[in-house]
Figure 1 (tube, rainbow, N blue to C red):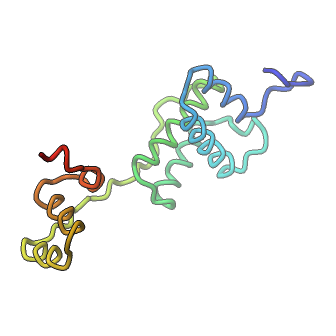
Figure 2 (figure 1 turned 180 degrees about the horizontal axis):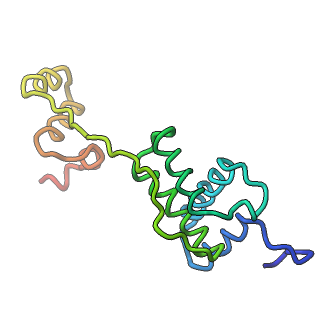
Figure 3 (figure 1 turned 180 degrees about the vertical axis):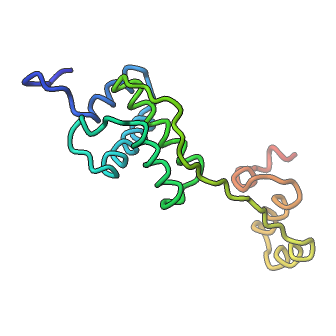
Length: 156
């Protein structure tokens, strides 16, 4: 890589960024993957590249920690896993096989729904344009921004 003096390998995150850019990953993906690599390195208190050895066990310990102690969502844990799989597979060229960490639990999403009477009482508290927008939201199922972007012209 450019700017590399003394024949030393580039710093890990610089190398990671280089490979991500070589493969045309989005800037936001680059930032996110580097974030997870930083957290991984900090979690294991790594000081040198040799500390990255035994990657599978370290990745499993980190992901399990995220799920159990950090209580992250499954999507967040999966994002961290993908970043670390990229690090080991594409950057270090030491692909990890069958990472088996404790998986974060998906929380049940129970929607909160107003009764018809509660909806009537809420709408009655409003007047004018806000009341019209709320009635549109309630009656048509529009999203908030969809209702706010409506103009008289499209309604005619």
